[in-house]
Length: 253
Image (cartoon, rainbow, N blue to C red):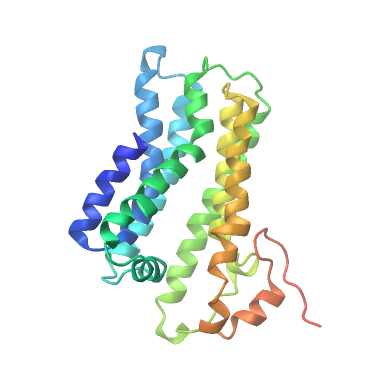
């Protein structure tokens, strides 16, 4: 299903001439995966714990999709990350992008969603109820950090006086990447809830790998690779604010 979904998104990217639209379809892809699994188990009734799991995935994925769609479709330019990839893989970028970007994202989407898929494949009974409320709490914390962090950044960027400046207040004063931390909390929360619904323990590999990517590979590390060159004030921001996990500001010595 993930492969077919991404092929359709790739086809749309050919029409629009922009690969970055994939970001807007990332969250909704998880919603579709969860919804299809919910339909397959609908004969068990609507009171299954997985119905709450679908609601959790649905709220997170829909909000993220709408937020990114507004940002991406409101800007006619290609995202600089994908523009760099386009220049690197010419000629034949549009065909190469199917494998390099879209099919790769399909595999990652399936891997990240393993706990959710496994929960639907289980009996649906909450076997270890202590993990369910903890999972809901972490999920809620993550949605809060993502949603509020995105809203604070959008409001900051809407002010022309802030061009070139660094947002270092609100949630952005607790962590340099509240959206990445929020994603981290969301997926650990979904894993805990899925585990309480019967997903096997080995599915923890999904949030573990996701955490490594967010902190060390495609998240914080990649984004901050050259950001100090584009925003001189970011150096001081790094010295005073935690990179990932929220915490109080550090006093520069």
